Length: 232
Image (cartoon, rainbow, N blue to C red):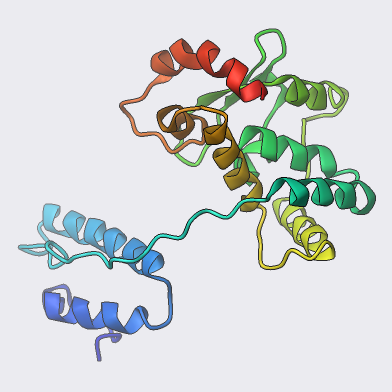
């Protein structure tokens, strides 16, 4: 009954609880929480537009769950992966290496343009981000070499997103690593950067998980201080 169409004034906390219990049997808690926060925002707009007197999602608690430790590629797996990649997908190997050395999201690297690459200052400007806010990434020597070797191309990495992910999965399976996605390279960068001594605060900005209070001026001030650690 709670899955049928309802008028706005029929949506109650009790109905929301029933809805939450039902969908939580089929999808992960983190996805359930995404639904709840999105619906809360939608209903808040309905209240603001005077379609209803109160937001029934106000006071609804998100599901609690144990967060998984991010999975990474161990050093032997990294070596095995790139050995296999050079044979199975040599055209994509520079991109895979770029991912694990920068921590960029799949789309961020594929949307990179040459105007975003400053070879002199060794800085990448990531404009087309998930948060819609540009950020800067320092280019270590190997990243600069990867991009320098591709300067004759129209853009640094001109590949389709799905094909990149598909080839990554094929390569990992070929070396006995099952059930992993391209995000594993990003989480590996994050973990190894922390081990190299880069603070969580800095990594939050580098990875693009930053809030509005951290801005370009702050990051530019710390760029030089993390350069040596990134080079490791």
